[in-house]
Each structure stands twice: as C-alpha cells, then as structure tokens.
Image (tube, rainbow, N blue to C red):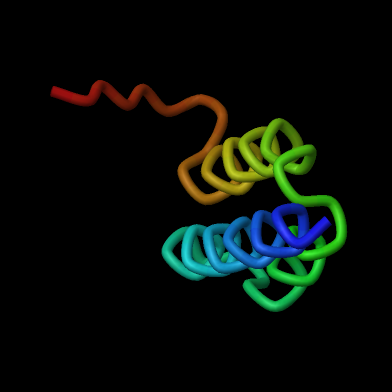
Length: 65
C-alpha cells in the first residue's frame, strides 16, 4: 500500500515537471498524476503531442537532427 502512495507521488512530480517544461497546465497534470499514477502516461504523451502540434502548426515540417 505504501509503495502505491510513493509511486503516485513520484509520478505526480514527474508530470508536474514535464508539463511545466512543455508549457502545459502543470498543477492539473500533477493532480492527475497523483490520482492515476503511471496509468496517465499514454494520455500525457498524446496531450503533449497535441500541444506541440498546435504550437508549431499542422502544415509545418519539423526535422530533429
């Protein structure tokens, strides 16, 4: 039981930092990470991609070297 709480806190910190780095609502993602833990990872990565595509644009080509 205690390991689930620790895991949720770790993922809450992870989602807070990553959302802050990507310019997303960090408090919302931290709270969701605290509640859902690692289950939130696929939804976060999709949301991060959508946020990036809205910022860059859908018709622009971006090649990472």
